[in-house]
Length: 255
Ligand SMILES: [Cu+2]
Image 1: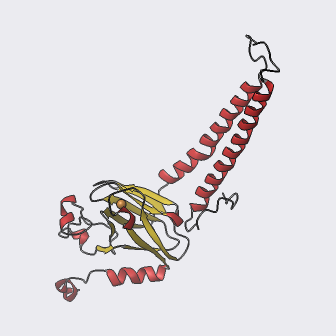
Image 2 (image 1 turned 120 degrees about the vertical axis):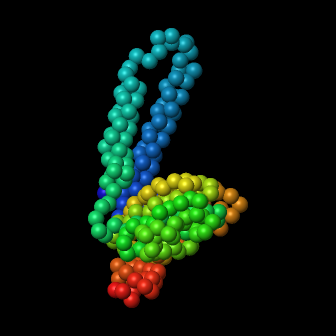
Image 3 (image 1 turned 135 degrees about the vertical axis):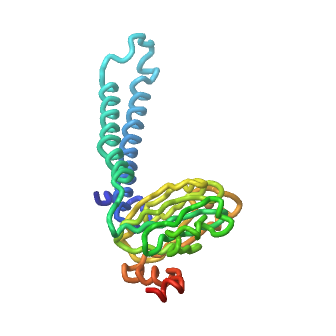
């Protein structure tokens, strides 16, 4: 589905599903406009039609025609088509059709008062064990004793992602409810304390944008800002190499 119109002046889109979200938004605005004009016209017609000077005597029988019934039935049908034909399929596409395969990149985003920390699983693609009791030791609660954690790394205030690859971000919080909001990606996911809520998207543009917190989370909410970088596949490989923890000396000499 491409964008219906540009009249809502929505912000730049930088993800694969973003245009569909905008099209839905624009279509609904148009539909509401039609309903608003239609019902307002009906309201004005009623004021004119049932003006007391035109109807000096009250009619106790009431409306005899079926025009209003037909109108209401058509509204129900149109709304059912919207819900069943558009909203549900789109919703299922977002929540059921999760990306799988080797090119899927997974990151954890952990919110706290007032900032964001990001946890990368490293070359093995497996996150080390998470222990919410370990938030005092590192900002993402990673158990560094876990074998899967050996190549994991953490960044604070900046999330780097590759372009044109499906991304799953596991959103979590260390204290209160926050919200990972990345407007150009049309992604917004609540961060619940000690819970893992994943969200997925495919970035389509290289660049740097702001991550904002979409839930009023305390006095520093307005300054709870981070950045995300979408980079080329080559630059992302470089980023992973640069941030990969150095292999243990013993293992390196044996290898
Ligand atoms: Cu917040």
